[in-house]
Image 1 (cartoon, rainbow, N blue to C red):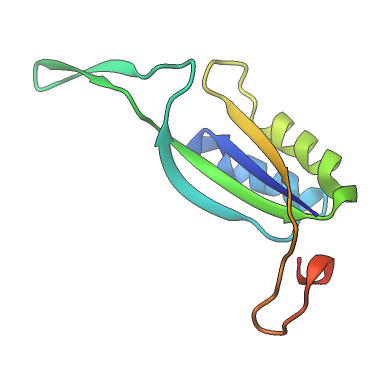
Image 2 (cartoon, rainbow, N blue to C red):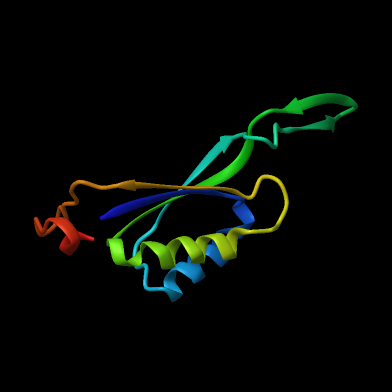
Length: 112
């Protein structure tokens, strides 16, 4: 089993969700996060004062899936989240040792 953590721009959520559903991903967790990478934030003016916004709003998606679904899910996220501009985000993939469905006690891929 694999866990994908993807950090994307907030306005891309619906596109990414639909793309993942199209390749058979049934579950998704979304968290509102803030951060920066190469984008480094930006400067804004509020009531005449200039200030720097260091941490930009992003969404972190977490998806747990079987190994055979990994490539399709990565491609779906990449294509649907891409704008071609700086700050499009990142995808991280890790191996997941165990998954347990609390309601039934199922373990492993059955729990996913």
